[in-house]
Length: 98
Image 1 (cartoon, rainbow, N blue to C red):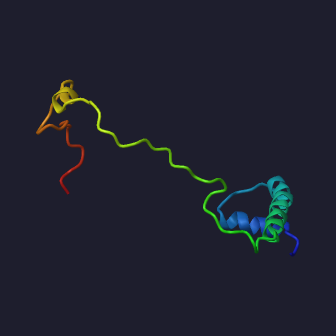
Image 2: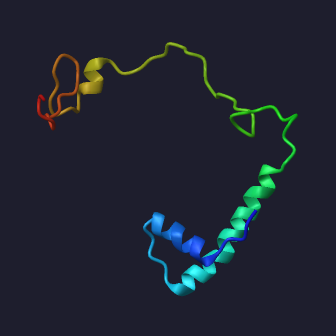
């Protein structure tokens, strides 16, 4: 891989529309170089026998049984509502019909 230059960093900063000072450009040359080396190291990892996965840890869905149990009646649920319509909360319209 070719060496990252100050001109390369200035070009990338221009593409990203980031205004960097001379000191920041000099600092970023080293930092971006380290990042590029790290990416190259990861790309060289032996992954031929690694099975693709969506998550590094197994996912377990925590659910409970769907059991009917006592709950509020519609009248009880709407008892504190300022307005109701057909057993539903009625709220002011905030969007036009369009």
